[in-house]
Length: 515
Image (tube, rainbow, N blue to C red):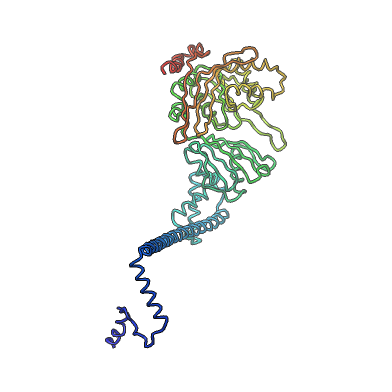
């Protein structure tokens, strides 16, 4: 049997050129086919044009085969990508379902009052252990890393600020902008990018907002939908909720670095030159009245913090702010904060009330976090009544515009003071204006250090001590700038000599002659 099988399969394994016998009757079709084959063979031998066409046809077929191979390779790659995306979607769906199940059980089973009596570390450990117990009881398919992640998320939701905890812990983030429960942007290294976090829904976001403002005794609800607050580390928070925010609750956080910025660090960042830093250091020490001017996010508060480092430790300093964010290092500091009205619309304490009151508190320096209204007049009065070295910030695009802004804010108080008298008081009270600016490449620079010298007629006169020039742009899109001293001797030089910092001023001015 084996030999018969081998005999039958042998012709199929190795076919011969003529696998069938000739037919007994030769048809016209066979004759026609043989003649056409012969003519074609003869033409291929004797006709070079036909040979070229054959080569082209062969090349076309080869190319077609190559294209088909590439297409198949791309299709295989797409299939693999789709497979990975499908697996990721299934994993995400599995985690989402597990998270909802754990959160529902945790919310119903844990004792919130007992958590409130614990310290932060013990409370987080309690929540994490409860999450692990629920996962074992429900027999959820979770890896150790996934279980740890869900435990942290639950602890952040119950004890912290939910998804914001990840962004608040990350260094280098300057601003956090929440435009709704599923739209969060951050500013890092001068660039705005979208963050990979989101809230469950608008109610979740609103709850986090209420938790932040409630920590400092303020409220945000439909009757009071706008609120300014601060985080424990001093970061500034602004909240606005529906119905004013149409697309959901919005929150903006101006986040401060854990490591306090100094003039030395600003020099490392390229915000100012060593010579300009020496002059600003002298300004902070020799008790001259300073306005820090600039746009939103230009670094006004940072510069004000740097200036306050050079105040003598024994001086009594009183700060007035809407939300306390200044980080003074001196021991003798009194921090005051405004208060919004209550539900009945009474009990409001404005910035002007604080500035008026601090004049009765025997201050040596008054620092106003942001001058934005009629309190500008009270600050000028304080500067003119023996409180030398007072400081404040104002929103303006250049030093000249900062003076105009001060005039307009004084006019908001309906004091009926002639404009000439207002300008004379500004010229007498303010000594130096430090202008900060955020350039189009995202960098923050000190663009002007200007000194007010007096009045000429109805115009307040000033002179630039340092000025920033934009020279061009490099290949990476970074602006090429040059910050140089004008070499002008400042009017407050005698004051600098009184406090022993005249050498700092001279060193700063000599840069103009050395270059």
